[in-house]
Image (cartoon, rainbow, N blue to C red; front, side, top):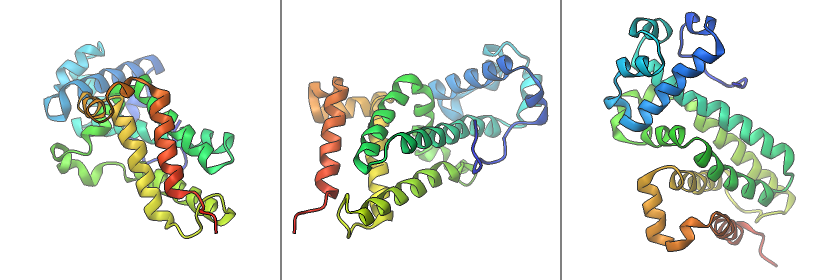
Length: 223
């Protein structure tokens, strides 16, 4: 699943030799624990028990709890890369891509809220000791793809020609992330509801409002 820019795996060669079902069971057990208990609160003994393996086996697969956590984070790398590749192939227009990314942000939160909650945890000071080891390629994919998308749209006249591709990409990513967080995290879900009330339960209304906001910010103005 990982693309050409994916970092080296965090697991050992032993982990690669076990069955697909067992690998998935270990990763799903770890993901559930990190999403529920946070990094500091996750007990590897409980992860091993939930995966129906011994603690010794778990340490043969991952040398440290850090590596186990980072392996889960790097699932995001493959997910982001494959999702953006699919959207960019299917949607030729800038605003078509923006709408598709907004929808993907919501659907990914519905389909895999645990992975999104772990990603939210990466933005907190709790994980600052791991900051240098967190996969920069996750953010690099978004930054590169969105910057190119903006630059191409500006050059073609689809959006205002004087936008700054890098800053615009950063701001777009902030919108996408906050919507994704708001459908997976209890805190951000409550925050969304505080701001928009009952519209928080209407996915189509959220997508339409976000898309309209981005259009107003970026569309080319009549001369």
